[in-house]
Image 1 (cartoon, rainbow, N blue to C red):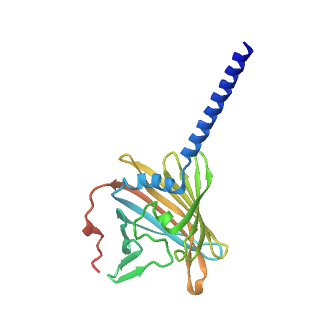
Image 2: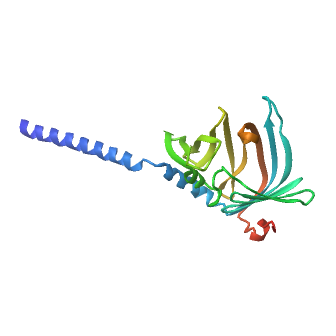
Image 3: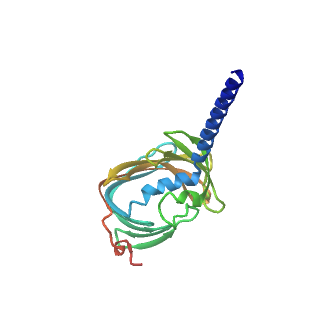
Amino acid sequence: MIYVYDILLTMRKFLLLSLFLLLLAGQFALALTPQDYIDRLDQNFNKLKDGQADITLGIGLQLIGCGGLQQQKGRLYFKAPDRFLIKLEHETYFIKGNTIKKIDSAGKRSYVQLLYAPDFSHGYNAGVLPRNFYLKIIKETSTEVLLEGIPKPGVLKNVTRVVCFIDPQENLLTRIDLTLRQHLSGKITIKYQPVDGINVPVATYGKSALELGKGSLIGLIYDLNGSNLKINQHLPDSLFEAGF
């Protein structure tokens, strides 16, 4: 009788140990990598083929600790993966990747190529993060995931570190904290609104820095808000062509 009891006890211990190992293996199997989170973010981004909205854009420079926002109203158009058209009160901007074409109120045309900026040549989506940064997870809970990004060589000149805040339940990038040269910092906050079943970014605001002559940086603040959104309207390619 004691022998049978010992066998049953041993089997029970074996089953408990096996269950524990299975649960442990399951935990490791469910562990996500930075790329897994990027892919989840892009599941939402990729639903947005094009969009348009009325916008209010405020931009200001912080001089000696103070500064206000100069606001303009206009209309913004987007077409995936890499094109914007922004019509403001005094300027019109055609943006493709890292190239900007501008037409001012007098009809003067100019062309700008962004240097030392994130590489947007493949599009404005979450994929811009692994293309430009070495990523690692520094915090992971059921309600918040933080990805640290260190710029890859030759990509960014003034940013030394970013921290991306992700909502893992909605799979949305909600904030980016920036560490800049000259002991400066920045923060980008992104707000979303459900439109036709898709979480669409409708506002972004925060602060960064602008490089002036001789490499010095000055604080830059901005506030962009959108309204009257329409998405996936099959906007024509011709809308985004500047003609020069």
